[in-house]
View: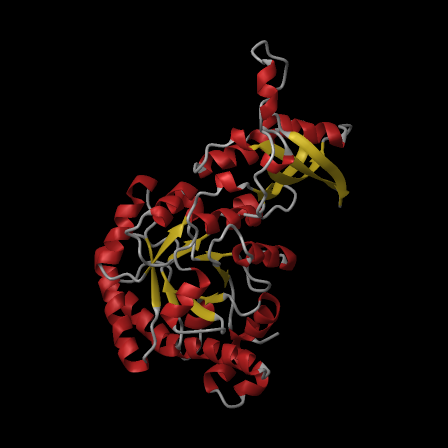
Length: 412
């Protein structure tokens, strides 16, 4: 997270965790009073005076730094003394900065926008591989990576899953991942699926010379997730995937800290929009991006600036910056742009997001009229065109797969 120097006495700004909130107070409520209600609720206060409150706990009070107008509401920065937090307990961190405030009667809406932690609370190792480590595995320097999802989302047998993976690999993708809903169901058990996919990826590698990662979804209950990830690795997996909002950030922490997990961790954000989509209420993705990076995410979905999912250009850029800016010595996390991407959108995405990004396309690859391999080639051709400084339409004149994709989906 953003670094704050750890000097000063308890309760002073140097020792505080600072949270930024957007809020709209209930009609007739003073904004300053509403901000103080947040600070009190998330630290030592309650709705009424209590006889158990003693003077010495005042050092743990949350304090309001500022309240400034913003749009139809206000932005406040609130300091929480570091003593409120149990070092290393990320679940407890969230309980302080994002606890009961969302139901406060003085507020119409409230959104946790960002958090700045102090050194004492960042005892986490961060990504084991990061952007540079994943690039070393794939053998790239500066081009964006191309990923795809096994489609259909669920239902394929292990052998058919391997066949889809093979077609995507020979077409030019760098990453293949399970869908968020595919874990260890009887129709495609992990014990059979992983060897089937990895065998086909080895076959593709012998033909193309290219290493492709397969992110196996190991999401399960937190007390079993390390064992499942270890099993996937023993079966041959060269990457694992976790649905972090569904398993909890503690599960990601367990994977990130366990020395036996020696492959990159791909983090999916399924269900995030229940918390992040409303820009006046909930929790911004930036907070979760910071948490995921410090807990060990090598890749994290942060969204697109086009495609089928709800998106906000400035928020996506800020979220990606949280994954890639210098932060507590942690390696940089690869942002993943996903949701409705196809070759015609590649140039627009890269012109805004830069090339340190994974472009994840599902239907935009498998829906190609000539099949998965052709769809993967079309995505790779669109990336190559951008890297060469050539318009996608000009490049398509001499690249059949790309031409077919642009005819089907268009371009921007």
